[in-house]
Amino acid sequence: MSPRNSAIQMTFLLAVVYLLMTGNFEPVNLAFSVIIGIGISSLVRPQHLSIQWRRLPIALAAIAGYLIFLLADLWKSSIQVGRILLDPRLPIKPGIIHIDSGCESELAIALSAHAISITPGELIVEMDHRGQMYAHCLDSSQAEELIAEAQEVRRNLLSKIFE
Amino acid sequence: MTGPFNFIVWGALIVHIGMVLVCVWRVWRGENIIDRLIGLDVTTTLTLAILVLIAILEENSLFIDVALGLTTLSAIASVALAKYVADQRMF
Amino acid sequence: MYPISQIIGSLFLILGTAFSMLGILGMLRLPDVYTRLHATGKVSSLGAVFLLAAAIFLTPLSVGKGLVLIGLLLLATPAVSHAIASAAYRIGIPIKAGQRDDLRTRLPKIKPHE
Image (cartoon, rainbow over all chains, first blue to last red; front, side, top):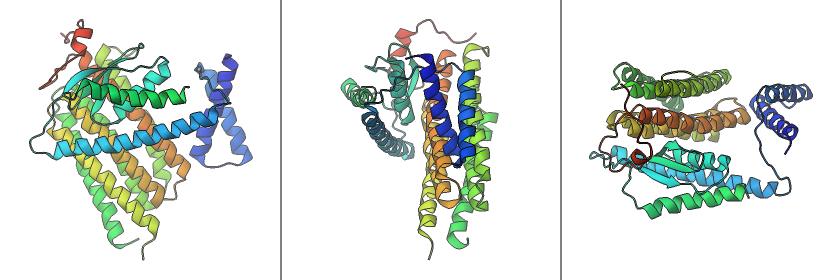
């Protein structure tokens, strides 16, 4: 994809965010949002973001499913951490475990690291561009298969977004 | 607005101010520098929460614009400070 | 007698305050830096997000701005947590009561600061 195309995409995204923030859809504000988007995307180098317009609805549905999965995960693990904190014996077994995110593209690796970090109970300490992640866990005694299984679920959801 | 609703908002505000005091104590008497950094990060998040509560009390969404700027700046500042602590230089 | 939006907003408010209190309690109780980061991540993710959701119901705030703020908070919080945890590991802060450490074999060159 040419750099001009990705600049246009970035301008569009920035304009949408600006319009959502101001909540004002008059023509003057629309024009102003486009001007701001062009200004910002000429200042930074636009990132390569390959959008295929034909399978955009599928990707959007996959993104919605991923967000719901993320929120459910956040809620579940928050309750779990809260139970640990309110326990007077404080039953934690901390440790750093290795997780292999089976993703290739950098955006997918970053998103799966984000999904792991946003749920309390696991926290990425170190990661590299080959997809090897090292997560600090409150309960590091759980079996390797369990962790690999959770990562497999995450990877399936992400691969639906990125085809 | 009166009655139990007002009571809930004021109670939440007082609880949040108490939590900010705990965090400031943590920044003052931390075990190490990372501990103080965590205290600072939580303090800014709780300040965001207090701004939201004031906006609810005053029924004025102007305070939430301030909260937006505060969140952006505090996130960038926390990342920059953590990088400074790790590398002992800024850039 | 009360409008329904006020009741939902109050519910979100109580929930957010409870999660923030849980996070501060964790910050005081947990033994070392890494575990404290788990607790404080909860304050900034769930506590503040629920308070913002309450503000959407209770103030004349436009829903778009509230959603942008919630998205920004959910996007930035894990990055900040990761930056602080990585800095802690790089300056060699030990893991208390650690059961295992897979990273130690991978990054053997990192030593505590002199």
